[in-house]
Image 1 (tube, rainbow, N blue to C red):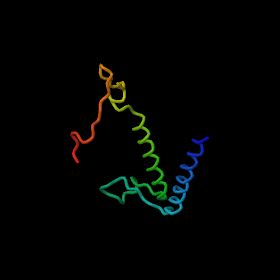
Image 2 (image 1 turned 180 degrees about the vertical axis):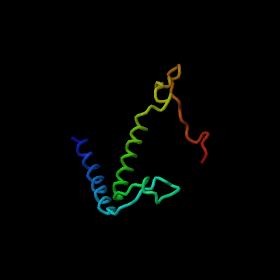
Image 3 (image 1 turned 60 degrees about the horizontal axis):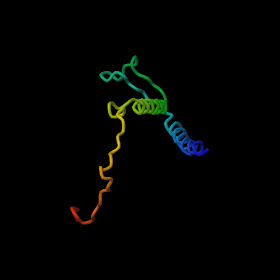
Image 4 (image 1 turned 90 degrees about the vertical axis):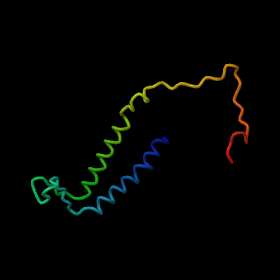
Length: 102
């Protein structure tokens, strides 16, 4: 139940922001894929600007989820080891003022 409420608390503001961005950026924008001749119509795409924004957000989500799900090399699969206690079972004493810089 808490997860459901948490999802709503996060998703409703995100949806509102996306709707506001879409309404505010309805004008047409041209994405020129030819950097040497931007006027070339064969390699350009004209869409409402919010479409470009949504595509950029979707690409970011996919890249972020891919980066999160991929293993991080040897450190991700290495087992976690605990430090063993001293042989006599004694604990380390911390004495204030000794060896500390003030």
